[in-house]
Length: 117
Picture 1 (cartoon, helix red, strand yellow):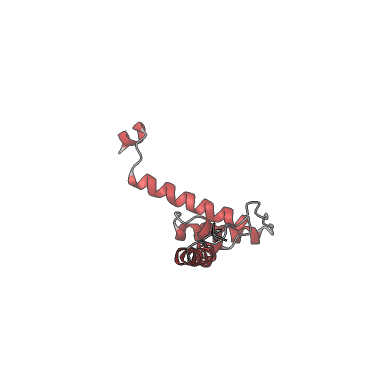
Picture 2 (tube, one colour):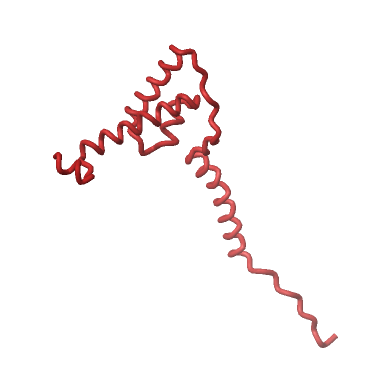
């Protein structure tokens, strides 16, 4: 294993440790930014949730002990994917209904003027 470290090859153990440390850091940052843990999970779906919660909890304890205030997040929370899909569903259904009506009713024909008056 020493050779792998010297060559810069990441072992599965090192990758797991790095991933856990990143998730804890994300959780800590979320707490410091006054985000709820659920928001943190939503914003970082690929991060390990248990490690993220551990970092969030540790930062919460630290901030309470030292009477620190959080910082308001600058980046707004994105809309939940479910709300976006529900909002677009009625609009797409309405547009489909309009298309179906257009397909059923042919465009009106222009009145032809007869030559024999």
